[in-house]
Image (cartoon, rainbow, N blue to C red; front, side):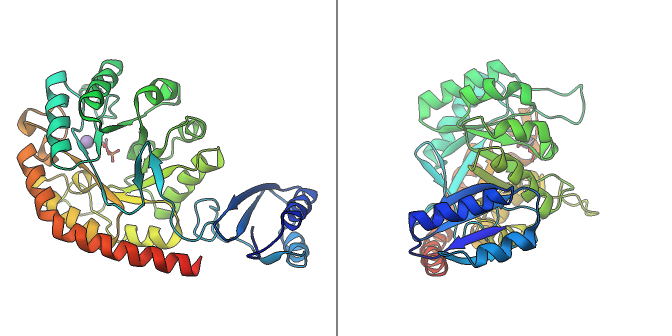
Length: 349
Ligand code: PEP
Ligand code: MN
């Protein structure tokens, strides 16, 4: 259930409503908007009885039962959009955020060259896997701690924040020491032990959609992280499995506006894994800008033919620079439409 308080509900009224909710055996999670307080009610109990009682309680504007199984991530719980902070950067705010870097961290030279190149071209965060989920156990598994240390070096040299993948709940503390944002890969979207432990990691989480997961399942996984104490979740569409073989995955571009209707969380697009082909990445990135994504995460490698993973979908540094240059007119439109969107959200909040 979600209880929306009246615009000028008093503190006592809010407290009283919270007490009533607890009397019914539920837990209370409130969020303070600029103009009103919204209270999330979780737990098991007699929903109808509780709803009727709360609707009659002073200060309550509306009490609604949520049919969707997710609550905290829903737009009903929080109208408008959440901007998630990664240090001084905001995802879901007034700027389209481009995250770039190699699939895997391979060597000092590789990561430093990439970091410097993408930073100069306008990327705001550096990606790079130190723990790699590979289909084959014989493929490169990542440099692990050594890779994390190289990412830190690249951060020190360029000022770029770091996003890197976390594969196991055992490694959360270690990765959180080096990462500014924790990436949960498609293969781990439903690793519930991991999702729970990310609730208390103290870092924002970027959750990638599983390759055979529905949008609802993606939101349920985000709900895990939020329900366990971490509201800072960014969603990522990275393509899903279909019968099509022309691309590595099928980019479910409509997932972005669908998610924007269902959730207040920011949504970014991964055009690299969505297509598997370098030549398609700029077009998909433009599609992401046009359709209202909050950013993209793109694979870039100084020498893709030598990449130990995902070379075919990695842009060269030159290719990345060109993509960024060609994106500028689209980004201007994005910024204009974002100002309008935010004004609209504000009116309807
Ligand atoms: C990656 O980002 O390199 C990766 C493994 O992506 P995904 O989890 O989307 O397959
Ligand atoms: Mn990859």
